[in-house]
Length: 122
Image (cartoon, helix red, strand yellow):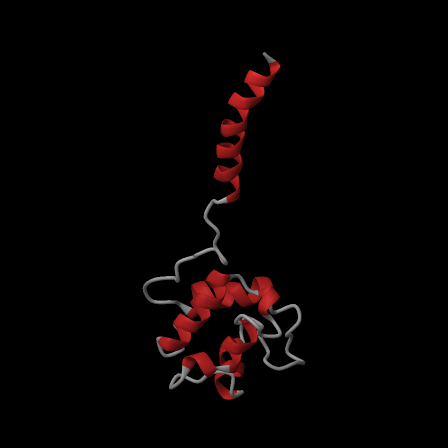
């Protein structure tokens, strides 16, 4: 009788094994890009305040402090509205960039979208 139980469990075990080992696999989590107009004051500056400003004070470039960040980015060569993906601000936080670990996928997408929208001080 023990042999019968083993034989019945074998197909069930095999099916269970295949179900767990042949599931879907995704290389990365899909996070949709932000939609609509990105505001410098309500989207970009809070991101800089929470992730960047402590390492980019007035004494370093770009200065990402609240009152000076926009001017520092626009006059310091960090933005390229003609080719947004080549903007230094974006390439630093994009995958493979030196500051990638300080930006989520959503924040990176938001930054690119803001530059694509003309990098407005809104």
